[in-house]
Length: 231
Image (cartoon, rainbow, N blue to C red; front, side):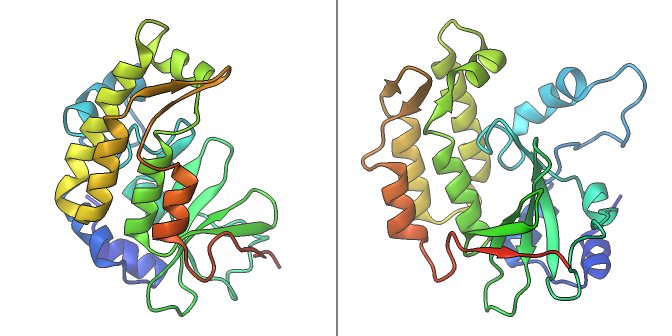
């Protein structure tokens, strides 16, 4: 079993307290209870996911259709691409997208370690001031601009938004003991909102547009800034 201490030694970094708490509560492992790689004949969708769904790990449904937490083993064994300037930029990866982009803590000397999205090209973007803000942002965005094709692929075409709503609420209940009340209240309201529909997407109606909430509550000095990170 991989320990938090192993990850901190590997990446020369002390994770923030919320990450530590969620790690020790086994909330950061999308392979919980299974060895990597899976045994022959088993798949994540058929064998792992049904068990995880009983007690959702972080952002299991609310991270977005292209989001995936790195397992402790993947964080420990992460191989930094040769092109990345790791002497200048201290990244600690913890998640990825289907397109191959990486979410990471960016240990740049700030009091709180911001979260960045490292693109497949030579750039990275600041997306949150800290880990709690990142979680809230992902969960908030999960209720907005939900691609119909992605939704139908996961839930079918018969009442998919209510099935999706139930999964979002399960994610919220699993993280409820760890998020600040302000964020929980907004997510509760959003996940209980009326369904909105456009030609290509769905959403849940909150009291304010998602972009407005992000601007009001999550904005910080570097939000949205892009920088080059390769040699």
